Each structure stands twice: as C-alpha cells, then as structure tokens.
Length: 198
Length: 86
Image 1 (cartoon, helix red, strand yellow):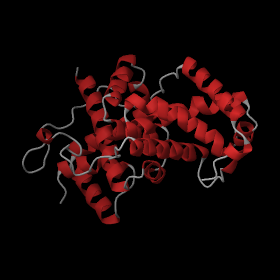
Image 2 (cartoon, rainbow over the protein chains, first blue to last red):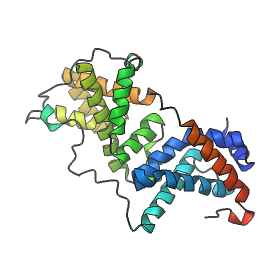
Image 3 (cartoon, rainbow over the protein chains, first blue to last red):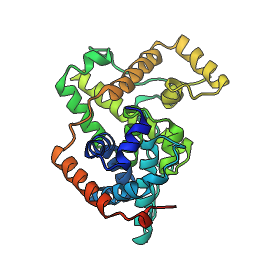
Image 4 (cartoon, rainbow over the protein chains, first blue to last red):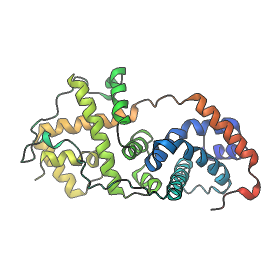
C-alpha cells in the first residue's frame, strides 16, 4: 500500500491501519529501544513512542520514510528517558577490546589462515534455511548478540535499511556502525560454520 | 599486500561494496590468489543472504491487539492542541 494512503488511514484513526503499522514496525521499534535503554524498559519506551507517533503524525512531512521517522521518534524518546535517569547512550567504541571479526586464533602470526573456513555441506541460502535446526541456531546466535549489534543487523540485513538511515536513527558514526555490523555478521557466520561442522 | 586476516576484517565492506577503488583492487587481487579467502567470502556472502531471508519470529498477536487498542484510546484523547509541533 502506498505510504501516503497508509498515513491518511492512520490520521483517520483506521484500526486496520494501526494494526498494519504495529505488526510491521513494532519489532524494529523494540530493537531500537533495547539498543538505547536496555531490555527492561524498552517495552515502556516503545508504548510511549507510539503515542508520540500518533500525536506527531499530522506534522509528518515525508522527508524520510514513515518507518525511519517512527524509529527516530523511538530513538529520541529512548534517549530522553536515559537523560531523565541521568544515564547516557553509548554504542560502544569500534576500537574497543572486542575483535573486529574472525577470532585471532584462526590466523597465524603472518596473517594467513591457521584454521581456514571449513567446507560447508550445504551452500545455498535456500537450502540452509530448509533446516529448522539451523534456523533456530541462527536465531540463537542473533539473540546472543549485544543489543546494539542486534539492532544494526536487524535494520540492515533483515529490514534492508541503508546504513545512512540507521546512523541517523541511532545517531552513531557510519564507521562505528559498520564495525558493529561486521561483528554481528561474523558471529552468525561462526554459528553456521559450527552447525555445518557438527 | 593484504593478508587473509585483513580480508576477514574487510568482508562486510567488500560484499556491501563499501571499499575505495584502491582497496577493491587489493581485495580482488588477494581473492584471485587465495582460494581459502575465496571460500570464506563466498560463505560470508551466503551468511548475509541467510540473515536476510530468515523468517521473522511471528509477532505476539496479543501484544499487537493491546497496542492497537492503546493507540485507538490515545487517538481519541488527543485534542488538536496536543499535536506535537516539534
């Protein structure tokens, strides 16, 4: 459905339009809230954000997609909640102690593979996804990611948002978000590799 | 010349086409001569495709219904003066 029609229906208080946006956007909103305020109060922040969305919708100018605009409201509400609690948001420093990608022990001192990637029995994404066991293994790997990595992975690789939009929503630098995305993808890669090896 | 470790660090930027021209050439040269890194990049690309295709967990219908009802209530209580003009 074109976004303008959806917005018109939302402005008219159409229950089905509310249901559509809640179904489509709620989990992304939760990811953004969790990355900023943590899991404990993320639900509360998202509920407050929905009310802010309904209040602000008549002033929506369409300079970004509706989803990006809604996620920015979540981000702003979450950050203002942090300020009220005298906490601050940190996406972490890309240069922190966590390794950027593959574990160090996979490489020899000269940077060549010491433990190269093992051959995968199943190679195509479609075939990989036919295994319920592997799907659950991938979900577990994603669930174990730090909240900020989960959020970036979800917005970028599941929701297809651009890095530019993600950086605007979370107000973090592109270089930092790219490192966090790479770490998240590498952890999922390692989970698939381990599954294939068993 | 880039090492295999460098390639593993650059994998996401390589598959997202986010490298400078010079770095693209360096990565391509390494991949030309290193079959282990070719395998790695192929598998890494598959990983990203799998993440993209993984079915989202079914939304909690009860939570959605509750949220929709809250929105309807909120909408009914919003007066024209309440519209956020920020």
